[in-house]
Every structure is written in structure tokens, then in C-alpha cells.
Image 1 (cartoon, rainbow, N blue to C red):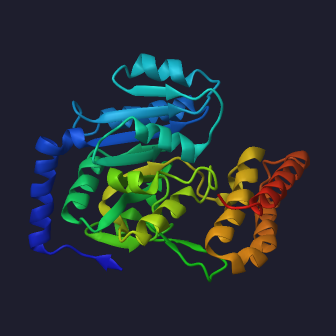
Image 2: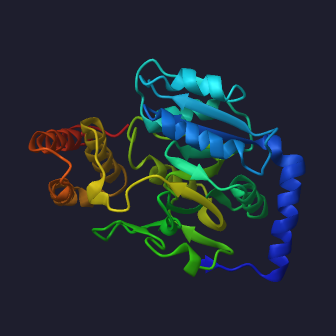
Length: 321
């Protein structure tokens, strides 16, 4: 459901933004996780540094997940005010986010993937929304494609467990210029970039990195937050850009990520939807169809991805932590 603001609510939002800038700036931390994508994380940090919100007060934390491309040294050199932590071995997205969040006692934590770019007032608008809506625990922006910034990737995602295509990306492929960017949309989760109340992270003990080190970790967190009474929203006035290909079949995966896609999906069903384990072979076939359609992959790479995904499924069947 989309909630359009009344004139009074718009006034409250404007006043709240002013309060955020003057009083709330030190109460938000921004956590970025990255692995061997030095150029992208530097581009993201550049957009953060140009943000109109809290340039002097925003605490930015980068967790370099065992990169080998010089990310740690480059970020420290170019952004001396950014706190940079580096893992000795790759721990993957969920645990890296938990590590980053531990460095902050802020009221809110904004998690941002390294292939994002943010618009100037995004941080302030998300905090303003959270301040005005205490019953929401997670909020994110509208996200468009970086290379086609008028085309929407999502305005939040609806999780529909009884559907084969479980995740419906709200407004996907719609033109940004054709939508009304006021108010907010209730959704299941907001992938890629989202703000969470720190008290929720503490209560839930962060992301469930043991079961979902990569893939499904954001949906799991949102479902657990929902179980404690907090909702999730996409704030339509906030905007970010995601540097991915518009066509999923052109996106390439590392074998380790294919492994975690298979493992995390299976673990998710073990935890929430045991009846849907019967559907796992069909999802594997769907995964392979996408790889076969990707002309950038060699036959050997397709076999590696298939084996990795199947291995992930077998590991996923083991006991859920």
C-alpha cells in the first residue's frame, strides 16, 4: 500500500529534516561492505562526501572483506575520516555488516552495498521518516539503475512465499519521471541500501550470518524485525542508484556466490517454509536457464556454477543454526 502525505505531514517532514540536520547528525552511522571492488566503493564514498546531510558529523564505516585489490589502502588514503576495517579472510556480506555495525552506537545504521551511489538528501530523508514513524524499524529509498537513472530497479520488494517468483520488485522497470515520489510504500524488505534502528539490530543480534552469509540475509532480518512488531517501508522521496545490469541474464556470478545462493535459499526454506523445499529443484533449473542464456559464460564456467549451486543446496539441508 502507498501512503501519500497530507499537507500537514509534508510540513512535519520538512521540519523533521531541519531537526535531523541540527540535532540528529551524530546519531547515524553508515556501513559499507566491499570485496575487490575498489573503484565502486570509492565512487560510493565520493557520493556520500557530497551529501547535503551532516558532512561534518556522519560516521562512515567501511568493512573491507579481505580484498586483494588495494581497497583498504586506497580508501584510507582518499578518505582519512572514514573508519576502515579489514578482515583477514572473506566472511561475506552478512557478517561484514555485523562487524561494521559494532563500531557504532548510533541510533540508526544505514547499510549500503558498494555498487550503490546515493543522492544528496537520502540520509536526512530516511532519518526524518524514521523519526516520524516509530513503528517502522527498517526504511530504504527508491533505487534506479546507475547506467539508466530514470529506470527503477525497485521501490521496495514484496515477498510472496506462495508464488514461484517470490519477490515482486515494486515499480521495477517503471520510469522515475512517471511516478509520484511522495509518501512511502509498505514492503517486505529493501535490498541493497536500507536504514535500521540500532536497537533492533541489538535485539536481533544483527544479521544471521551463519545461515545467510550472502543472499536472503536482508529478507531474514526484515522478517525477524516484523516478528518484534516493526514494519519496513520504501521512502519515495529518497533516491539511490545501483550499478548492475538491467537484465539478470547478463549478470555474472562467482562460483562461491552461486554456492551461497543455493545454500541460503535452502536454509531459508528450512527455517520458514519447509513445505517449499520441494520447489528447490525447480529453482535450480531456473538458475541454470539464466546461466545458459548468458552468452558471456563459457561451458566450463556454467558447469562450475551448476556444481557450486548444487553443493550449496546439499549444505543448506543441514541443520539450521
